[in-house]
Image (cartoon, rainbow, N blue to C red):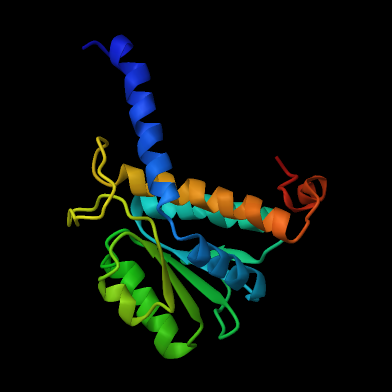
Length: 190
């Protein structure tokens, strides 16, 4: 099948995968995560590769809501404290850098740690207070994972970004934030 002929069916399949995965996210755990974000003094994000790129977009969106949000490793990253929240993105829950950061956060400041990932039985369980699971296909091919036609972990990264934007929208509604007021937090030197 040519690219021209295959484009729309592929779009439909990718969107179906995303919808299936997002519908499988536990709404109670999402609400718990939203409360933790609102209650934290600051929110920190850590991941690697494409996961970190998605988390950077979520971090920026939360900053647009007036939340003190930071990415681990940024040049302006402040110190993390017990009153803060660390959100760790790792589909497998075993990526070395995010796992090491979660361990350090637990051992040094004992802040709240949330793991957003796919594998509920990962080493991250030892450090995270809870997991917000996006049950998409991983390299482990667990029986309850949402299968994907896309390469590697694309579905996880897509869902991570969209879940972050959905979470931002839910926070706007929950806390009755006027969308027009958000522009005060948008970059204005561009």
